[in-house]
Length: 300
Image 1 (cartoon, helix red, strand yellow):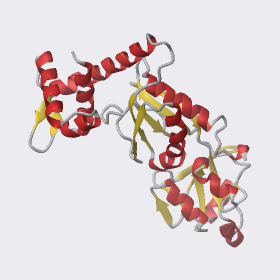
Image 2 (image 1 turned 90 degrees about the horizontal axis):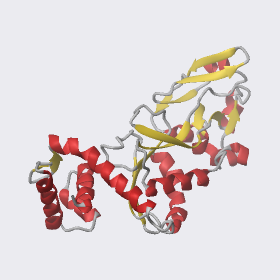
Image 3 (image 1 turned 30 degrees about the vertical axis):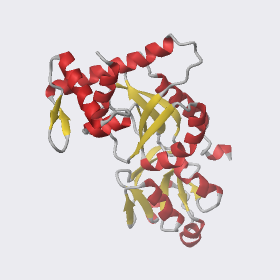
Image 4 (image 1 turned 180 degrees about the vertical axis):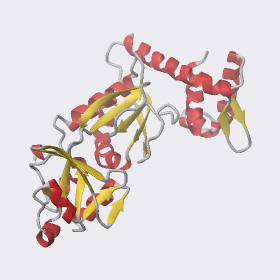
């Protein structure tokens, strides 16, 4: 079984396009099509449905896909284990990450990462939708939500501290809330799906439902509305730290910590063998973010 044929098949499963998958691997469309034909011949099964517009996996192709990925992972790890220890990871590293976090805290770090690993190519999908790791053909996903899929492994890269904040303009006009209960008398900017804010108090946990005239489904938009003086908001420190440093936002209710255990996680398929390109990515970014991460106010 040809390893290059497997690489093409795995990429085809993500792109649903033989020409595109072949192009990403430096193959012409005729050569890519021939490779898929030869893989099917070697297995004695049709893996791909072909039409004039696109391709899709057959039932046999879907069944074979996880095994193909496991074979490639074992090959990567095996090559690394017999090397001299000086070889750098090669190939394409496919990453999916939340749009805002990726733009703010992954892309700016790529210059240093690729300088250290020049033989890697990075293919990043930035989306606020949680894309399937296996289905999308990704090597690693960056997430700030709890892991639901037991077939995946998560390694924490950094804390994702959340704070309550408001602009000086808003506080000058409406006053500063002194307790979580006081938020009921304030304009609250809520993020879709995160309208309930839980606080730790001397009397135990308290849950406040954010009420106001603005609700938005994007964290940067919540922050920007807060900077504009439109209300009080709950923000991730990584999304608001620069505005906090400039004084455009002010932390409030600091004596009442939010009950929020969020973190930034690197998620990858469960396996005893971790591909070298994924390992160096995780190690580099864990070190890059630091402990505590550079966006936390403690580092100011």
